[in-house]
Image (cartoon, rainbow, N blue to C red; front, side, top):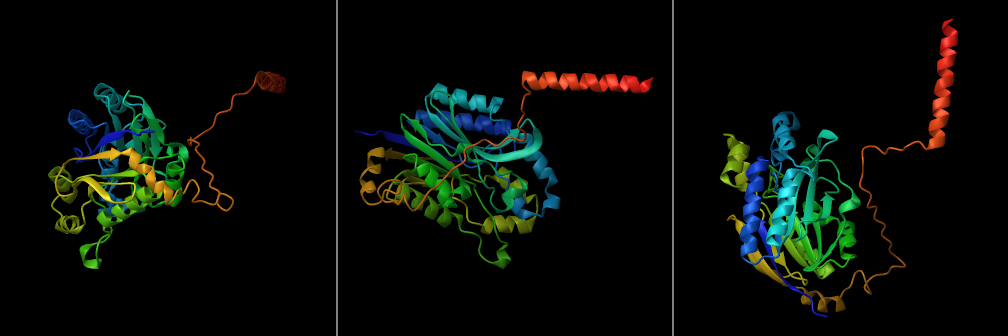
Length: 349
C-alpha cells in the first residue's frame, strides 16, 4: 500500500482586522496563491475571519462592549455567503481548505462560537467543528461548542483532523481523532495570547507551548502536524493599542506565535514563520506514518481496551427540540378545546 505525498500550505497571515468582507477577499487571494504553488491543503489560523478577540485579554469586560459588537457584526454563518465563496474557491482551485472563523447563528444575534471548517476540493464542507471550551478570557466572547465536529475526514490526500488552539491540550479530544486513523492534524492558533502585564512576570510562551502540544500529538498519533498561527499587522496593532502605551508595551513583550510543521516522530519539517507574514509550505509523505506505529500504537496494540474506555457524544447541540403532535394527540387536543369553548359560552348565559 502506497500512501500519497501531500504539499500543504499554512497561512501565517493577518486578517483585515474585524472586517469580514475584506478578510474574505484576502483569504481568496491566499488560496489562489497557495494553489498556484502546488499546495493541495490550505490552512488558515484560528478565527481568521474576522480576527482573534485579543481585546478580551487587555481590558476588563465593562470596557469591551464596542469590541464585542464589532466581532458579532463581522462573524459569519456556516451557510452564509462568505462560506459559499470559500467553498467555490476550494472547488475552483481543486484544493482542500481549513478555515478558522468566528461563527454566528440566526437564532441569537449575540451567540458566537470559535469554529473551524474543512472544505473538500470539490467545495463540499467535510467537517464543521466548534471549539469545545473557550480558553481563559475567550469565554467572554465565545460559547462552548459540542462534539459534533470531532471528526476525521477521509480524503484522497489522507485522513485530516483539526482542533482549535487550547483543545490540543485536551488528551481525550486528541485521542478521539487519533482513534479515527488521523494522518494529518491541523492545530490553529492566534497571533498572540497575552496572559500577564510586563511588570507581573513573563507571559505565557505560546511558541514553546504550541510546539510541545503539536509535537506530542504527532508523536502519539504518528501523524503529521500543521501549526497554523495568525500574524499581527500594523492595522491590528494600531486598533488594539489606540494610543495606550501600556497596551503597546504588553503586546510588544508578549511572544508572537509561530507557524510550523512536525513529522510523525515529532521533529520539525518544512518552513517556519514567526516575525514575517507569509505562506509556509511543507511536503508530507504519509508513508512515514506507518513505521512509527511499531513503537506505539495508542489506538491499537499499545492500549488496554479492557482497562480504558472512551465514549464521545457527537450530538450537535440545539437551543430547543420541537416535537410534533401525532394525529391522535391533535384530535384529542381539538376536542378538549371545543369542550372548553362550549363551557365558556354556557357560563356566559
